[in-house]
Image (cartoon, rainbow, N blue to C red):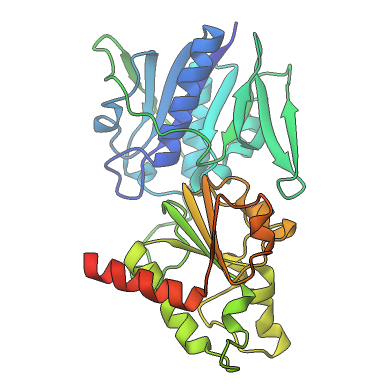
Length: 343
């Protein structure tokens, strides 16, 4: 019979579980109900007591490690904590979020407890057994994986499950604090350095993905290139809407071809066959041709819209839910004015 352990960690504030952790909890609740398996949750945090509030009533045991050593992400402390949680729970299935904190330690944890691991899991299925789905070849091939070896570690991609928000934990849930013997810690977190909010263009938790295509830097109807105006329109929209910025490969490659570019774009913004495949509730493509390599990056976008002057654009051939046949410069200027008025 299967037993499930969901490993979670606190967010950057330390006051709540991370969103990806709550998604893993949802996956654990659904899987335990389907398999009629025992469900345990493990928490890695400096102070896990207040983090247990609101966890599902299906949990029979809550395991936790605590101490200032676990307040920040660190390989040595996180790997030791997760290993001890697994040894205490003795699960056959371990679910964990594919977060930057856990992704770098979970393979080592699986090795230490004699298990196997699969990453970037997007769905859990199977009747009477566990089957994990993930994508290969730039999100073009979906593979369903099943394993007999236990314990089996599954790292769940963020955005594939709804964050858990349900009934509170029952009063009779057993809370166990696990002691961890840490090795010598050579890494000390002294603080964070991050760009200002208005300088940040990649926002994984944003509800909207705004994708800019090469058309922004091409000659406009007046025969001139308006790169500076294009950059201002895009940045103003990101500031007003808090959207995340994506780019087509052709646009980010222009810097190496000696052409006029948008200075705030890098290859980190690139979405598509050779870029990332983000998950946002909505997406808006502007000045993009909508061909297949780029659409691959939109595979997991909920609602897809596009702005193009070409009524025969690739986006209109069943690749977008709505296409606005209009000039992107005029459309975004009007949208920015409406957003500014609302603000």
